[in-house]
Amino acid sequence: MNIRFQFMKYRKIAGIASMIIFSISVLSLTFRGLSLGLDFSGGTLVEVTYETPVELESIRNTLIANGYEDSQVVNFGTNLDVLIKVADQNGNSSIGEAVYSLLNEKGFQGELKRVEFVGPQVGAELRDQGGFGMLIALFMILIYVAFRFQYKFALGAVTALAHDVVIILGLFSVFAWDFDLTVLAALLAVIGYSLNDTIVVSDRIRENFRTQREMQPKDMIDLSLNQTLGRTVVTSFTTLLVLFALFIFGGEMIKGFSLALILGVLVGTYSSIYIVANMLMSLTLTQEDLAIPEPEGAEFDELP
Image 1 (tube, one colour):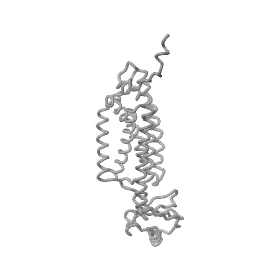
Image 2 (tube, rainbow, N blue to C red):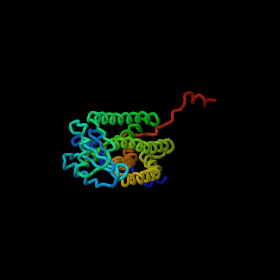
Image 3 (tube, rainbow, N blue to C red):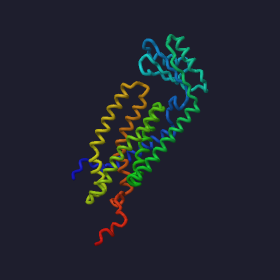
Image 4 (cartoon, one colour):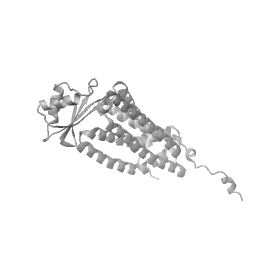
């Protein structure tokens, strides 16, 4: 059988590159941390509707000039609805009315739709619960893949998922992109998407290990990756088309969500090819590991 791409030929290079990027991500998360959004850091949301479109930059400059340096101003739904996010200032829950009054004084007169205050304690609880939920998801995936395939596949799958999540978090840390609940939701979606790719590749590897007895493990993994490559590329490409459309036309509210998913699809596609396969090669996956056990008493059934 012809193998078009010899992925395993470059597995060491890919492994070194992954370790470097992973290390940079961990260092950035350790010493720089994430730029937490209002959902986690605490603050106030102010939604105002105007009769005519207003310049967001003008509102932003007005807020900065009056002491609200950490404020964010975005359109919400239409260009007539403006959502203002103001960082927590010593637990001041009345800051929303103060911001609305300031805008009216400066000529930005509109209708106040809602004011929501998120305390720093609530934000911390959301952050902790989100992280705990992610760990639970990884643990359940480890158990499922171990039962569905074999423990070596489970270690490879969880390593790939951890690799994807840490690198995405690292990129958000390095470039100081806002990390909020939408990005956390995107990370959980990335776990599911990456796992789907990993399951498809793992299933083909298992099948080939059971049927292609004459091939070496490295060649069987290469064959399996090539057999699933078309499906992987088409799925990733069509998903990216939708995500780029969301990123470009979806507005500021979901830009972080779509950006995290774009990174997740790219990194997840890479990890399903190189991280999982690298782990299986490092753990010396053999045909005996995937041999189908004979049912008890089968040897007696063959006796005359």
